[in-house]
Image (cartoon, rainbow, N blue to C red; front, top):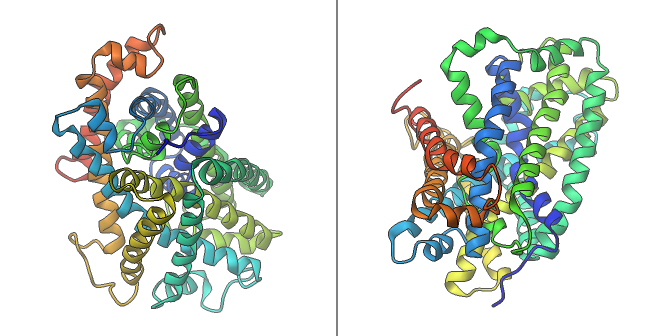
Length: 447
């Protein structure tokens, strides 16, 4: 069976951007930046994206294009008769874990969007936004129904194929998402007190740089915001034609991903400061804090509707890439059709998502890891263990297993003045930094 290909290089870039730009960019960046002093964190984040994120992105995509295979098959092709291929299962496992809880949170976003569409959230619910959110997520089946709706949308896009499904969807989603966020940013900047939010985001507090945790936070955000380590970028790279040049494409993806993170900050921080909210209010920011801010704004109901529509688009563009990782693997191994494989993989993830959803209700006392609930436990295993190990294995394969000439050829850097610099980062710097993230995030060694 001939391997599917992207229609255009731009189609690949938009799909890869869609994979990178998700819930993490729109709200995780904002609350991590809020917890780490704003401007100083932003500066470090930008530095790490360019110095570490983009070289690792180029590494992962090049493995995919060179092998023209999935996350496990790629290692089998490039390192035959070795156990390297086992590291590909880090990506498969993390995809199942991540999408099972990602779909639950995305389902919450669709529920909010629906409530803005029908006018229910144009004014605060009787129980207030905190009460309404708590009642909703702890309900036995309401959030599960919205999770199912989100997974159905994701499956439909993936089963439609690379060109007619994933590429076409992202050609619509990404420009629309950019326009929506820019509109929201202009509106946020028009609020009284918005200047304080901009000052917080863009004026570095240099004293914050004396705290080692800010470096770990910025490095981790750069690594995870580019969707590295799971194999999504490797899988997307495997659909590239050989004539598509990688360095310019990966730099473009890194810059656009950063643009989406910064524009999200411009949407959120001026509004947060304008209404006297603590910028480090954490994960509840999107589902409790922001709706209460929208209620106090002029045209707040419309702003809320646009914001949650943007959040759903960002969630979908990422979920599609996550589902594609195991779909591509099982299609190759069992020679199944794309239609059947994507439905089966998506259904398994949905069933796992039911457990995640119940973890906020009747299973709220279930704590698989320490005092962490079901969602936090899955997130911990995927984000702190599997993704760093997946990223590390890719860096080691290209930096140490392949010959330098092979690695440079795979990345189109053979005659480039930055080729040796890129190879040095991937061979030495990236593995060390990934190990530091791994040790810190798992609590083995705190910095």
